Image (cartoon, rainbow, N blue to C red; front, top):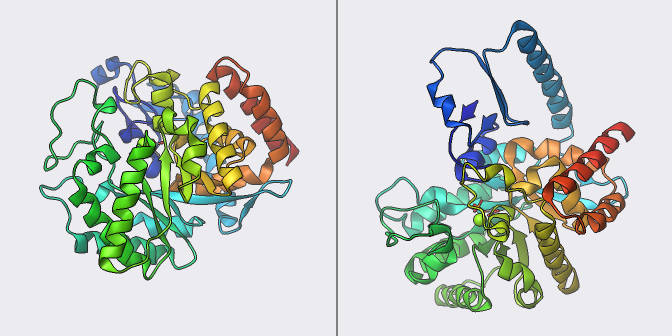
Length: 394
Ligand code: PEP
Ligand code: MG
């Protein structure tokens, strides 16, 4: 397990822990640093509770819970390859969030129907120069080859800045890095980096179904500039352009989703950033972390706008933020009309099992109530009840 005294549930340390299937608590009371080495603790990642020196009865109870959970996981894994269809017949595509090459194979084993988010930063981090076009080509090709021809791979272009700095792409010190040069802004200011990445992706598209999406789009002009760079790059190397989409993770883009839907091939909602910007709470903030919940009615309303815009234009609307890997979140997203969930690899079988127990109709009725609620806690409570009922019914 892993515990930190900083960060929040959607900060990148937490994302890494989840992608490795590690129980984790982030943003613990700094008093935890005073704990002696070698003492026994229980890390309950579900509830965010660290129990120091549990007694024998507590240890026994934790062990039996862990055994029961393991049994459930094993059952879920047996059906991992099967599609995820709600009890009223709505098919939900379950794809993987991938942050390195080797985990793509594991994603397939656990039933991923594609990669909904390839965080391409892994190629750019922990090195002193940017990766070359050929290095990137090899990496994307390997991920795509492991997924195979039938499973689309959505590659997100470089998303650095904010809490992901790069030594060879210095960004002048900013007072508010999350409101500064981040995501697509970094690339539009350095088009050569973007062009190199797009060339590598386009070359892979000649063999596999790879798609591109741009992170942190706030304004239609940014999208148009990025798409133009895409089209010019494709033309320059004589390869047809590929499906190009937008990460909807800034409230401005969510609210204007109808304008974007007229031009983009797909949307993927990034609930981690969408929530931090909607609530004006830094996703890495230890004190505010507990309040940063994508089940907030304001975030649900924005996602409904995005889903509706996608439906009208018949473009795919997926979710690749942390809410798609969250039990109650899954029910809310199905209710909103999201048809694709891109999730942390270890939870793919659990996400599919959850979908199979739900009624899309009931989820959508509850969403209609939820968007009129006044806080995330009430929404979560209502969906928790729905999840519990669905367990009882099946
Ligand atoms: C998001 O913001 O929800 C997202 C998926 O992107 P990242 O967590 O990498 O910022
Ligand atoms: Mg993001």
